[in-house]
Amino acid sequence: MKRRPQAYSFRMISTVWTSMLCLTILWLTVLTNTAGAAPGHEGEEALFTQLKSGKRMATEKNYTPAEKPTVYLTFDDGPSKLTPKVLDILRKEDVRATFFVLGEQVQERPNIAKRIVEDGHALGNHTYNHVYQELYSDFRVFWEQVQKTENILQETMGVRPRFIRAPGGTYGNFDAFYFYYLGQAGYEIYDWTIDSEDARRPGMTADQIFRTVEKGPFGNEVIVLMHDGSGHDETVKALPRIIRLFKEKGYAFASLTPEVKPVQFSSGKPKWSRTETRESFDSLLAAAHEHRELWTAEDLPPGKDNALKALPSSSAAIAYAEAGQRGGPDRLNVHLGDRTLAFTKEQFRFRDGSYRVPLRPLIAAMGGNVEWNAERRMAVVRYGAITAEYDLARQELRVRRPAAEWDAEAKTRIHPFPEMELANGTLYVPLRQTLELLGDRVLSSDVPYERGTVDVQAAVYGGYRTGWIFETNRRNPFAQV
Image (tube, rainbow, N blue to C red; front, side, top):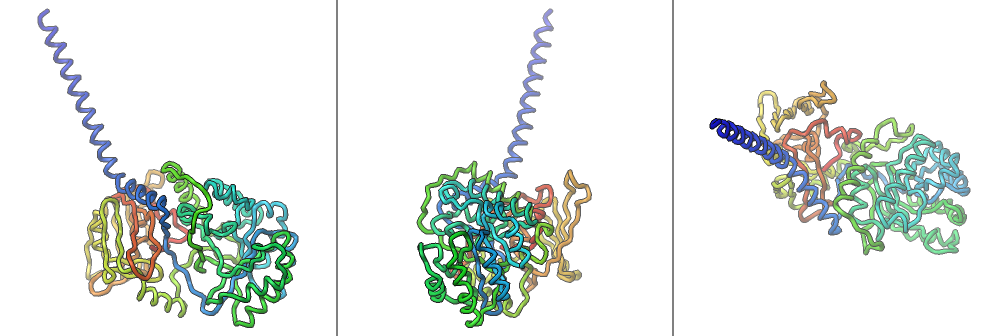
């Protein structure tokens, strides 16, 4: 009878120790997961704060300047009963243009929309109904209208336009969040350089429209805003004279392509009151990233290349790249979670609209290491569970990582990688590709200016992120930062 209390006491102690052990294991697990997730969380929190302050963030891409003066005629608000007349004039003059269409108008006149594509012109998304109050009170509505119109175009013509024009233009209507979400979703946003004012003032005559366009400004690349919606008969009358004007000035005519650098207005004083929460930010950003995966080759209409291009190779593009190298920011700060890697102008390269940085310090700041094999002219990166080989001789990058649960064969991938270069014993690599191929993610980048400091925010995962994050950008594996 005396031993029972001792046995009971022993069981109690055993139970307490077991509970403490379980709690300790649970605590360590949470601590480990939190540590691994922290950099990405902190980076996205910093991004949200910057966007909320009104600071626009952009992902730099490759654009090819026109080799000769080029004008891009654009028509908004159609298709309408006037659109066939516009198409007849364009066909007669052998001119290509871009039509930013409304979803509701495409539903009413699908055959006219089909003719736009059949005649070799480009299509852009101008939302579904053009109602400002709906579009600019909440980005969710803008996004839903863009998706609705996109689905209509896809079902009607098999076209998924990458181009967007904001009804009324972006000035005062878009904020930093609008620009960022759409950019992350893979869209190109185009305003204009010449406003024909055919929709600004009622009763504009064809002569007044022409005289407005005649004032310019006339740069190497000109985007002209006109309208082919109902009620714009005078625009149709003015169109032949406008085309003749540009022909006499020696301009070539072309449709917009993703090679054409978008014209975007400054944000200006906001016209609309909007509230963005961190929860809505996370949700919309996830939707944007998911949408980016839709840009696949089969989504494009025949003869239309809406894909982002590889590095430009024309003489004009090379000259532009050299000019970019002479310009660019004075400093580059790469924020990798809680670490910041700072480069002076002499330590990085700004070329073709992208940042190329020394591989070794970048990988070291990410928590990995680099070994140089002089005989094979190859840099071997070990970053968490990932091994990457930068092969200069073959101009390719080989990335090996553990297979994902859903794809046991996804172990090694080879990517053409001509952008890396060895200079004075330093291997320079494009920043975005290196981060994304190693499973990390660029969250944002300041718009580059010729002077000043540019900040790039990235979420890093220590080389243990599963899957192939690069697949989210498979249509353009070398979009630059």
